[in-house]
Length: 133
Image 1 (cartoon, rainbow, N blue to C red):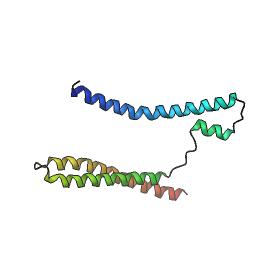
Image 2: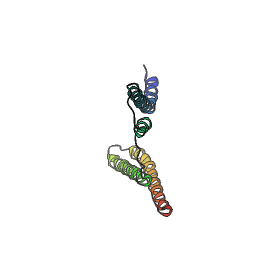
Image 3: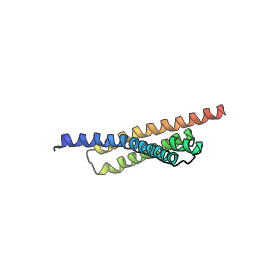
Image 4: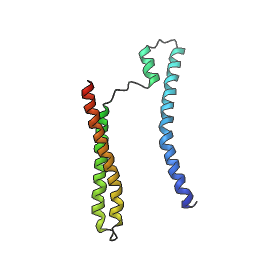
């Protein structure tokens, strides 16, 4: 199999696996919960309504602080941008043409811009939440 066929096949297969495997696992867990409830009801056991709700809905999902989660994402993106920028300047001596430095700075700029946007979004979200409360 040549590289022109193999590389796109692997890429799209990997992409499909990333999307489909969590969906499959979540559905399998839900079916397992339904099977457990059916077995308990067949044996004549009484089930607490809150337990049934937890099993069918996938448990308690704690409300997450959206501003904190967004701030964390922004910090991680800025750290990645710093890593790419540092790698670009450290790799300058390895490539005398200088193309490696420019190639490494492109993802640094993109990740840095996204990180700043996430931090601004977290700040705005935090400030508007303070006003609403």
